[in-house]
Amino acid sequence: MATIVAALLGFGVVLGFAAVSIDVGSLMWERRQVQNGADASALALAQTCAETPAACTMANSTTTGMLTQLNNVNNSKDAAGGFDTNRYPNGVCGKNVSTLANCGATDGTLRDCPAVPSSLDASVPYVEVHTQTREANGSSILPTWLIQTLTGQSPQARGTRMQACARAAWGPAAPTSLTVFPIVMSYCDWANKTGYTGVAGSAVYPAGPLESITPYGYGTTPAAPNSWSSITERKIFTKGNETTCTTWNGHSAPGNFYSIASAGCTSNQNLGGWVQGTTGNSSPCTGIDAFKGQVIHIPVFDCLQGGPITITSSTDCTGQTGANKATGTNTYYHIMGYAAFYVTGWYFSNTSQPSIKTGLTPCTGGDRCVSGWFLKDIVSEADIAAPTPGGPPNTGLTAIKSVG
Image (cartoon, rainbow, N blue to C red; front, side, top):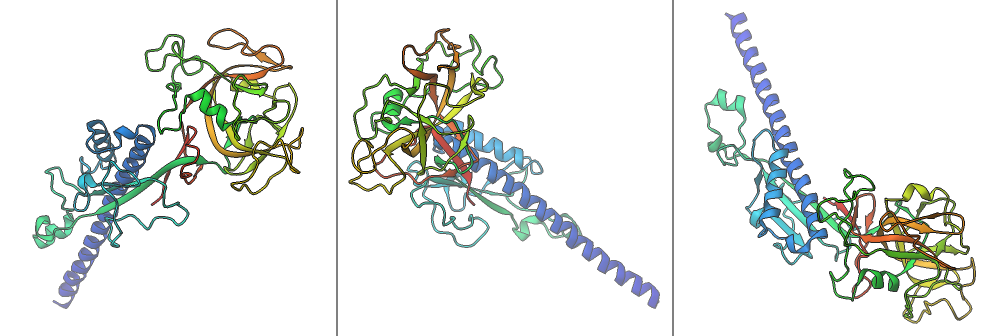
């Protein structure tokens, strides 16, 4: 009898441990799925808000449909992703986003994201997506199958559920290791060529290339909006200029040179840093042929000096006067942003490439330039720069990152 009792007791203990193990594993699996759904949805919503602010609202059926689909796909076990609506409508909130419910203070529960990183400026916009477990019948109860079987207790009686939260932010890209093409253009020139008037959203960006269409991402007669037939080519100059910018941020180096001293066609830079200029009519780098029909990132400067300085409200940013006057290779540009540019052709003293759109050499005479047009571009390998109140806008290159 003792042996039988011991065996039965031992079997019960083992069965109990098995129940706990299986149910804990189930909980972790559920947790991973609802977190995956929140992560994917938050990044997708942040990209929507960055690219199309008018669609950054849960009143937009396309946006809500996209989030539901992403959440469902990542919650494959339940076949339906549930949004946690106990705190925010649709389970979504935003900060510095007027079209979404405002994200409140955290209360330490799983329905809240971790605290906002201290590195994230308070003015940077972000969104949060809150998810929870959901059954096929629409309930949000998490079943623990083995314990339910052993105890005869229904899931509804326990009222258990898993929650998750994900946060994603966006803003002007502040690259720390982003590869940047070694030419610069002034903020005045950028505004002139994109049509920016100082009003948010006034810059005009054609649709970007589709990687699956050849040649060069656009093709010859693709369907709108990727057709380039209606796109007007622009030029970024390394010598000369076709615009007449005369404001403090519109000057080039003496002689109208815009190249950056660099050994290759890419360089690592920091937003808010200084880069040294160089002179000459040749290509700013070797290997430029690889960039035909590609998107490059162009530094945009807002100050010109004879060396790196601390900019104040009284700084002469034309670089043409004073003890720190810019001359020749003793020219430094202060980078305030980056612009994405689709390259169609170029003209330099040692190499030229007719435009793949017009078949014409983009520059003549003493001018040297790269032709193409400006685009919006999203990068993930860059930090987010704090927007400058009342200052220059995001010049088209946007960083989107998970921040909790």
